[in-house]
Image (tube, rainbow, N blue to C red; front, side):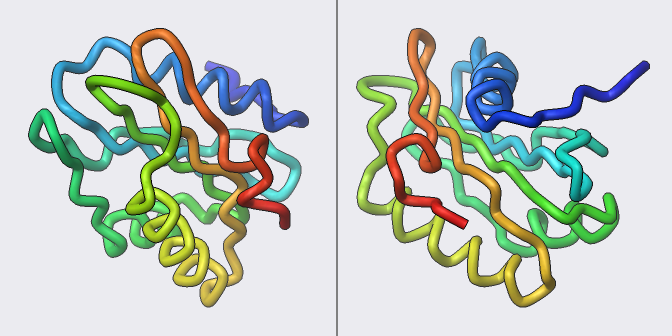
Length: 129
C-alpha cells in the first residue's frame, strides 16, 4: 500500500491520534518519515500500564535507524484526563529530541492523545525546528 506523505504537521498529528485511540493502556507509537515527509514505517513500540508508558529511548532509536528515518513523530496516549502534556512529557520530549539529533534525525512532533482530543508539541510551540 501507498504510504502517506505528511506535508503539514496537523495532518500527521491527526493520523497519529487515530493510531493511538482505542487502547485501554498507555501505548507509545513511533512514525518514521523520510526527508520529504513520506511515512516509511509506523508501529507501536511500547504498551504500559494504565498510568504510565516507559518510553524506551533505545527502541525509538533502533526503529528510527532501521527505518532509515530522517524525521520521527512520536505519540502516546493518556487513558484518563486531559491531552495536555505533563511535565514528564515535556522532559521526555527534550531527551528524545536530543538523542535523535545526535543521529541526525529530527523529532518532528510529539502527539499526546486521549479518546476525544490530542495535543501536538509542534502546535503548542514546544517543538520548533
